[in-house]
Image 1 (cartoon, rainbow, N blue to C red):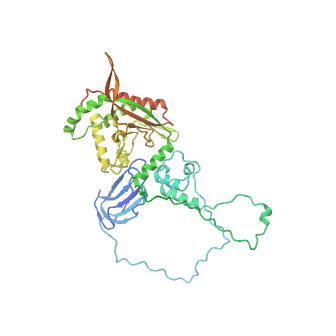
Image 2: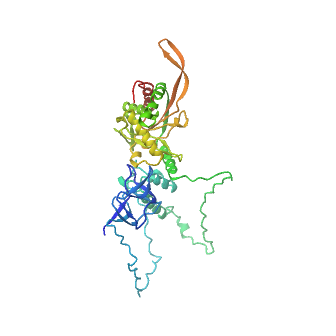
Length: 448
């Protein structure tokens, strides 16, 4: 019989652990190669994990709800198809009684084992921490300065759940030493014979929140908790600045109205404004490549690939951000198909970890909710994000060779939030202005 360990797979860059949501197979079930065995959730996506080899599921090593590090064993598969578990196996015999005296308890005079908190010699500044680790640190009152000294056993020294929990345990068990010197006279003074024993102080209890009868308490689902953690961490990490520009997109509106029905008939897909906006963002990134960067400690990482993230609202009300890889290598038709594909698969929870990894710049279409502008929060470790506002009709002054006229035009606001650690106001403002220039100078003679 050959036994093979099934391990937690790596499901995208920066993913160091996953949460077991549900086992799709039970012990003793026959599994085909590439057949889904369990559902796993990461901080990016929920996905099914297939078996790399067929056989019989002999043992399940982790429970539903457990957080497991990438590469850790999660199950054992018997690859020859035989289930070796047998009820005829002899039961373990009891150990024979021994006449030897039982081990005595340690004498009180023995010194207790030293329990120290293991720490790194130097802080691991700029190290990535998963939302789960940050949550545990926050709940245990561990500041980020102390977290940087916690030893990590994960990839590139990252701290896993096991590492932070071990640190918390050793931190809480470490003996508290009172270094305050006791005056010699006080030390020599005998304690009163009838002195009452010191009473332990009651632990402080946080008062329970009180709600009226007309309220409903709704627990956050897993994705909402992850979104909340990421948004708080982004605001804590990056000093956000937002610049606004209003763009005249009348030519784009007229061009789309001309082509949308023909495109729908020919391709069976909708022609939306989003791919047009993304194309303008990509062109502006080519002009200002220092927007397409991320921060790693004191280093700025400039990305040669332009991978555009697009925020997709899910039916549950949550938000997910798949990425268009190498968007600069696609024409408008290619961008349209990719936008529609990611949006459709995102709404039915069919995105893969690769769809959600590797983004270098993000676009959020708040105009789809009827909002004219917004102040979006940066997707870490990126340094900028743009919100596309609703397109509205406004009276405007139109310059013509014959003079200025008043006419009805279509306008939209572009809101550009950027990390002021590495993007100054001049770069952030010029970038969003360049995006507006590309939109206003859209080629109405092009076909799709």
